[in-house]
Image (cartoon, rainbow, N blue to C red; front, side):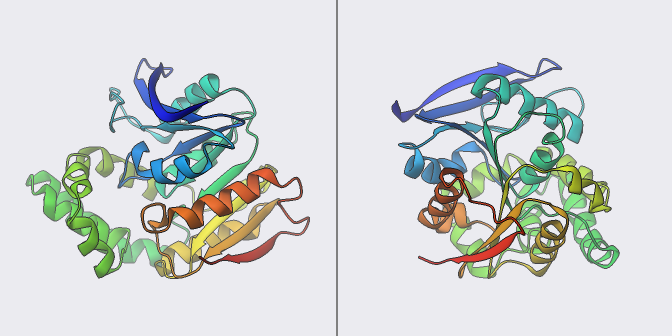
Length: 282
C-alpha cells in the first residue's frame, strides 16, 4: 500500500494519454474531478481514506498530467473513464464532482461499476435555469476570445458555478487560482457540452447502481435543484447533505467528504431500499 501518490498514465481510445496518481490499498475508487480543478484537488480526501481504498486521481483530458485529444465530447470523456476502469479493474467505485459527475453518469451506462458517488452534477434540468446561465456563459466565452483568462475564471466561479464571494476570495489567495486560469480553454468546451446534455432525466432510471448523492446545504440553488431531480429518478440512491458546505467541500471540508464516502462504500446496506436522506456534519 502506498501512502504517497504514485504517478501513472493510460491511453484512451483515441490515443489521448490520461494521467493519474494512485495511492492507498483496498477496493478501487476512481476520482473524476470537476471543471475548476484537477485530480490533485481531491488529494486531501483520498489521503484520508487511502487506508481503506486504492484511490485513483485521474486528470481529465486537457488537464494536469493528461494530454488533449483532437476533438471533445462527453463520449470521449466516457472513453477516458473506461480506460481508467481498465487500470483500476472492473467493479471499481467511481466518484464524480460537478461536470465530472455528469461524465460519470454517462459512463455508468457503459462500464461495470461497483458504486457511484456523485457530488452536485450541474445537469441543465430547467429551461429557466439555462436561460439564466446562458448570458453568463456568453460573457465567459467572450472573455476567453479576448484572452482575458482571469476575467473568464471569475465569471465561471461567480456566475456559472455560483460560488459564494468568500469562497472565491479564499481561492484567489491560493496557488490554485493561477493554475485554474491555465485550464480555461478546456473548461470552455466542457461547459458547452454540459449545456447540450439531454434534459430528460428519465433515462437515469435504468441505472440501478447503488449511488450516493452529495449535496451542500449552502450550495447554489441550481445545484440543489439538479441534485433533487436526479435523486427522484435514480432507483437506488441515498442523498447526504453536507452541513454548511457549498460546491467545493473537497477543499473546505475534506474530512466531511471522506467520512460520507467511506461509510457509503463500506456499508453493505449503504443505500436504503426506498432511497433516503441524511445529514453529514463536522
